[in-house]
Image (cartoon, rainbow, N blue to C red; front, side, top):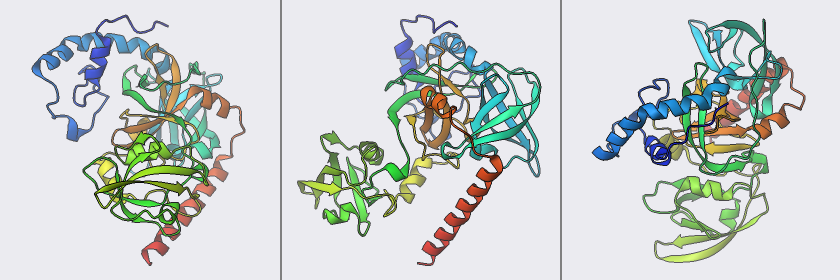
Length: 383
């Protein structure tokens, strides 16, 4: 496998290509958010540079996906009115198994199949589920496909990643923006605030959850969180990142702007997920979506890195490569307008050593959980 060709201008090219709307024309399957496509962020000289290097970039990306794409499949099933493209899948084991996203394929009943990069279609069935990670193992009929070769190297902050399509084109690209972390709510300490819209630096509190650590510490609506410890907080995502990994009962120090005038140091003891939500942020989540289609199951994973990669929900489950062409993980979800999660190869190989759950049992548990969530929302709506 050949790594990327040596290109003196590659850092400049990659930085320019990260600007929405500047995707090379050779990659029509790779989309950027529509609302950003026409933003004139580049000068004429920069735009000319990108045009000149598009062909070079196309030649450079293809080798990085040559191995990954051979182990990538599209997964389809027959819906009530039309065929449904459910997800991407990654060929594992001896080539007869496919790892994919459980929530995207759990409704498949009729004409369940996978399609490889050569257009060959094979019947498939779900044979196991890793429900807690929203992953499923499928078994194909017929001759085996090319299994993926994992490279369990740590994913570095700022590292460039490319998600594969079966035909060798990229499904998405981006950089690692947050290192490996556990998104499980039960293991996470909770602050207990309602974040409000805010044009300045920090996170403005709209309300404080009763009985929370934030309330006990005296935080109030209108206060603005500026720092967690020595870490500056630019906005809500930065606050989330600063709190990830802190366990219930952990004491943290916040720098808070009170009354828009004085900055105070406030110590808060974090609560648990059984007691309260972390952030009540429905309006902010709507802003983050900005018309984007997100995966139904998009967080609560035990070990993922965060990237600014933009993929379609139906492209989750496929392999991700680095600039050397090494397969370093799989796409787990499109979780925000410019946020997706990738499970690293080391976490995947460890997971595959564990026993799977029976698909029927996993589907039954999912149904029960959805019914409980609907009942809870109904009770909340009634006050």
